[in-house]
Image (cartoon, rainbow, N blue to C red):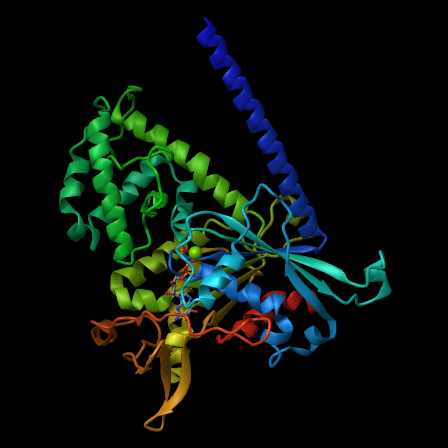
Length: 478
Ligand SMILES: Nc1nc2c(ncn2[C@@H]2O[C@H](COP(=O)(O)OP(=O)(O)OP(=O)(O)O)[C@@H](O)[C@H]2O)c(=O)[nH]1
Ligand SMILES: [Mg+2]
């Protein structure tokens, strides 16, 4: 009896905590919505798979903004010059983890890249501008302020977003198709058979599951190492994931061929469905809502060079997975109320990262390749009245453009050693077999950040970061 009362009390406490949490989340969300609606805050979402360069781009972007007068002294665009006062990182909510800008800055200055991201964090930047008129500055503060909100997260989480609109059965069908096609059918034929051998209506066997899940997880890691982008559950492709905290599940491939009318609650099928639902409702959907529900400007960051290096399956899957992810959002112009009720993404920019690794005379090739990779996404998502642009950049330039044998070339200094970099001809548009043959065996050089000065005193080397800032903040000066 007392254990029943205790359980009941525990449930009440959990329920009360959940209500308090949702009330806090609702208040936060409403606050964000109102700020966006009245033009005081814009939300930028960086959408990029693991290794695309999100954390580095964000560190470089914050540096450009908070040290604008030094970082962009050469590039300040006239409208900005007249109104810009300052930008600073602010913290507005103790419950949300802050983007570790200081730690990333210190790492970059020590010649290392930020570590691969393991959790969600938010970066909130307050920009102060001279008011355009007295009317704009009713409170007489001498400035108007605008907040820019950007989130950083592990790229593996992004791969799970399509699960938000699929049930377990649909996900299994998806896995079945992938397992039966290159490259997965070559990578894991035994695992495929082991997953197919489980009878979904038989009684769930926890030990057999544990052993199989370890194999399945190792396979997810292998897919990641091969440069593939459809990896679910994506959180288990992170080294830090703990299967005792996250619901672990596998695809019961035999259920793809048979539809079961009645399944017993202690069967494999029932257990996997429960875990899948829990994963989607408890992890995937909250992430989708928190980071992507109120986005003004979506930056889709793509590591095209990484996929060119990994080969055609990687590039093909990059194209497909981008299409799957982008289909989840609504795009278009917002009216005032839309921003509060059902916000749409108004601007979409496809950004190719690591441009510093591309020879200057081939940078336009990367732009053409980008257009080919995202053509399908643009067609299948509904982009009416959304501005779609492309930009190629390097958040931190590790190379310098020089001249060698009378041709523009890339020079790189890494510690004591210096070298000239070259690479095969990059394809103009979607690569054909001849392009792939040229790229075979090519390895993207793993460069370290160059020696970086104090950013308050000297600009950091980059390619096109000023264009990105202008592009993101352009609306503020319109
Ligand atoms: N040459 C060059 N390499 C870069 C640049 N930005 C990132 N990289 C490389 O790309 C790697 C991944 O960058 P991150 O910023 O950690 O990528 P991410 O998208 O945050 O990755 P996750 O946190 O794993 O999702 C770095 O470790 C660098 O090797 C750049 O501007 N130039
Ligand atoms: Mg990161």
